[in-house]
Length: 116
Ligand code: FES
Image 1 (spheres, protein in one colour):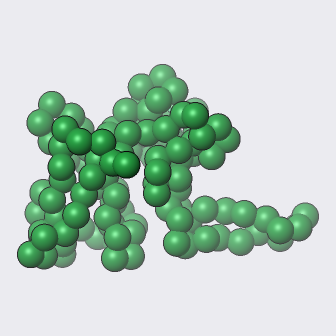
Image 2 (spheres, rainbow, N blue to C red; image 1 turned 180 degrees about the vertical axis):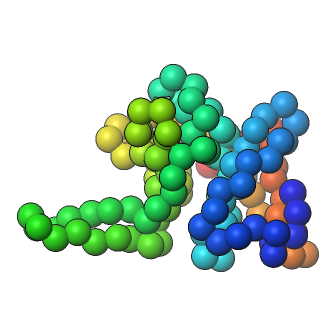
């Protein structure tokens, strides 16, 4: 897919892999790859915003977990954590994650396989 340095941190880049569009995200030193198809109504989920996961321990307080990227679909706002691709509100819904790895400083997608 390209050299590691071609991928800007915290930015989803959409690439064509076989017959599919896949969003590739560099998040700190980790990479995630997501099929660009939302499980809700097949929207272009990878055109959404990625941020750290928000949580709250008490009313009036909010923390951002920068270790856990969350993708928000631009059509209706469903949010997916990208470790497993599951929707935050109902983990029975999930985006399809594509296995991705770095090999000799290049980003490699394993298209045709589903991330575990
Ligand atoms: S199509 Fe993605 S939230 Fe509806």
